[in-house]
Length: 260
Image (cartoon, rainbow, N blue to C red; front, top):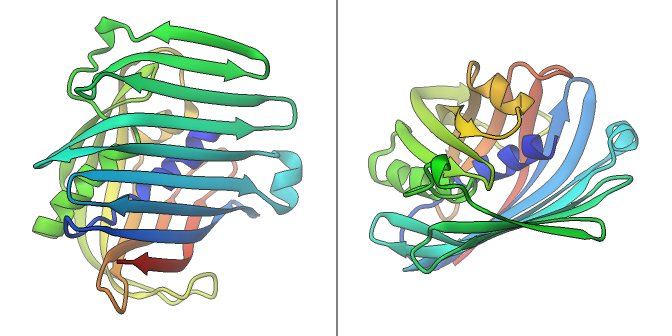
């Protein structure tokens, strides 16, 4: 389930525009089936040669009682031309019975070396296996910075990114669908003529199965891009996944704050 929320958070990184210092913060609501599942925040900053992303999520209401969960995520790195290199990837999460932390440690060239897992009072360090084909990969959040740079230049979503999350290798494939009107909805103030894209996640190699990846490797996540009214920075206004174990998933952006 934590992977489920991480994907929702990281997809909002498709908002980068020009290579100058600015930050964008999102507040959004996640609805799963009949549940108003969580309230979350997501913020990223982009500078000339560096970036960072931080986000948080906490389940609420009835869903929070059934599945109490909160988490924080942080990624930073550097940019050299069109290349994004992750330098830090960290998350911590808490459920009813467990507290977890994960840190992916990179070398100076952005190559993942080892992963540190912490669960309650136990810590485990594990080297990254060579057979996972991690050369040239980025983490699950950074990949959206690459896609966003492409979108800003071409106004088009089509792209393919290679991702390593510490134990598994994925290809993330974005496909452009074109213009579509995003209807007005009482759950979000953002609507109008939007650019629609889709995202597929295909697992290449790694340990354990993950239900979210099984779903999205066959059925895409859809998202709609609008522009912030004053600054014209593009942002993700809505996300839709037609099928989850609990029903449809809808994510509504409730507030966008841009600082330049």
